[in-house]
Amino acid sequence: MGLNNSCFGWLSQVEEFGANPEYSVLVLDNRGYGNSEAPKTRYKTSEFAADVLEVFQEIGWTQERSINLVGVSMGGMIALELARTRPELFRTLLLQSTTAGDNHNLPPFLGLRAIALSLKEQVVGIGAAENRVYRLIDVLFPSEWQDAKSEVDPSRTNREVIRALFMWRFQFVQRPSTHGALSQIAAALTHHVPAEELAKINDNIPKIKILTGNWDQLVNIKHSKYMREKMPNAEYEEWDGAGHAVHVQYPERFNALLRNFVQ
Image (cartoon, rainbow, N blue to C red; front, side, top):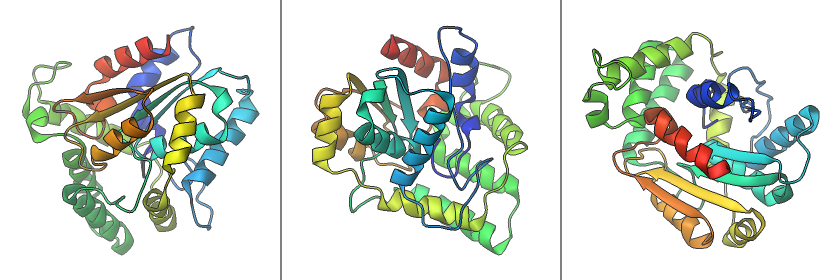
């Protein structure tokens, strides 16, 4: 999953694909967050990728071209590291709301401000958890979408539905240590996959798709366009009115896209 976020973020996808006997689904918390440990070391996206490879080895996911890899945000950065390290494992690669990294990895101002405020509250020990969750929601999802009636429950707005979902998730996720949270941020900010490595991924992964929303306040869409330029074999989709968490904002549409892509 992405930066300082748990695998609960994949809930709609686990419910969809985990219930289908055609698929086996693996989601995990990266080191430093959720139910994974937060070792007192410097974190790198390449080390996160090594962690994932250890899990693959443990559960027997080692056959060539047997894995459909999906990564969002920092998870997409990790997916790129996996794709350049062990390309033979993967049938498909879906990169959502992510970046190959460069000298301009900072998010847009709205996202940067929200991250800074949340970190300050965590380090100092002030501020209600509810406020941090609501602030995150306002960065992940456009206000126009939040104001609209929910298709799942027309008696409520998307804001009411998503707030209830996030607060429910919040009950089950262990709070990150300050070291874990800061180290994940450092890993994301220093992440970089050079253009020549993107070219190798382009040549060695059979199917690649790049997906982004045009209202992403955490990873500028210019990064997705850059990856499309360097990986010309990749399919590219930019969803109008979608924020950073495309797969949460439009779960049914995303699941249909993923299903068609991996078949």
